[in-house]
Image (tube, rainbow, N blue to C red):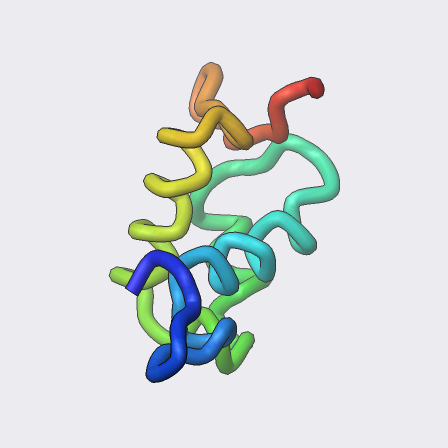
Length: 75
């Protein structure tokens, strides 16, 4: 479910959902505003999958939450 495989497409894997979320994260924003932008994306599907993708991105150090805003980490 995290990575695509023979039976799980990139769109269904959380890594694919994370890519969609990152595409919409151009500037720091709240969880609510980011959800509003990605909720219509077919790959994201549900709020639960959105949160799981955010968790994955946070665990891997791609995004952080500071003062209520999600932002990309500098490379």
